[in-house]
Amino acid sequence: MKPRNYVEEEEMRQKQKPLFLYLISQRENGGWDTYDSAVVVAQSAEDAVLINPGTETFSDEDLGYHTWASTPDNVTATKVGLSYGPMVEGTVIISSFNAG
Image 1 (cartoon, rainbow, N blue to C red):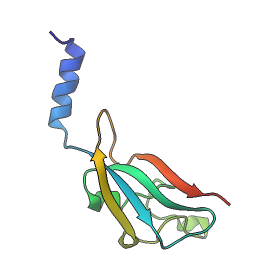
Image 2: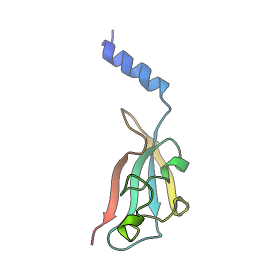
Image 3: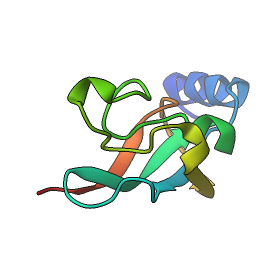
Image 4: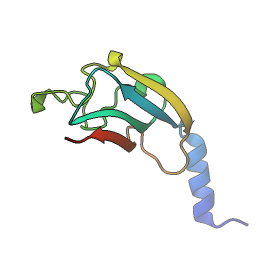
């Protein structure tokens, strides 16, 4: 018999909506001090393009320049896998930042 904690975790996992890993990328802003791509956790491609790898909100206008695309319309999302384990939607797993 499995330990109780494992059973409870498995039941909780089965009740949650599945989360996926998406590769998000943008070509609007290039050069130094910009992000060109990231792998993020989201339920759909529509949700993934709303994630800015550099800030907690999509907008980074307070910096005076964009480190990421100016709108979600300029971001592409490609599903690359299923998220296993206790992941939170909106998490940035890894990002590519072009430091200058």
